[in-house]
Image (cartoon, rainbow, N blue to C red; front, side):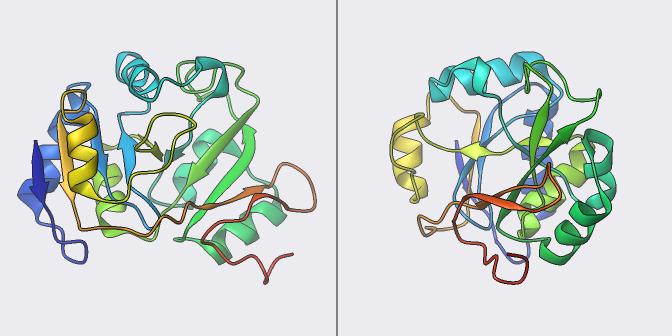
Amino acid sequence: MLIEINKDFPEYPKLKQAVDILKAGGVIVYPTDTIYGLGADALNKKAIEKIYKIKKKPISEGLSFIVPNLKEISKYAILSDAAFRIIKMLTPGPYTFVLKATKLIPKAILPKRQTVAIRIPDNKICLELTEMLGNPIVSTSANISGEPHFTNPVEIQNKMDHEIELLLDAGSLKNEPSTVLDLTQEQPVVIRQGKGDVSKII
């Protein structure tokens, strides 16, 4: 099911519809500040298994997820003073941060529980969804693993409609994935250069 949503002023009934699906263990597609993502409640094991199945992604690889703020990151990741300053400077924004994981990370999303990839996107839909759900939401590109990203909602619907419960259509997005930063050591390391600018920290 596809429903159009205002990216700047997301309508509450549409957000609630998406959150109700997430709470029930369903999978949605939602816009971020980079590309469209496949979303599920990051603390729901069965929902996570659905994501892996849809993406045809090995479970051993783990998944990233979104949270609404720095306080929530500290629940799931160990933050050094340097990492805290960098994340505070760059969020919300098009970055994925790789950090040392805490024991709160569920095995379903991170089998080895050593590091975790977390985002705070600059996107009202993302932030309000995770605020309303009360849990992190999986943030993984809406595509088959290893294949090109889908940027057009209609194309996503044609490819994935039978595997997802809801697609929040905020219009076409550019094919610009997030910049991935490893913050597990003293100095940040760019794993993938994407949309996010790192000139202030590198």
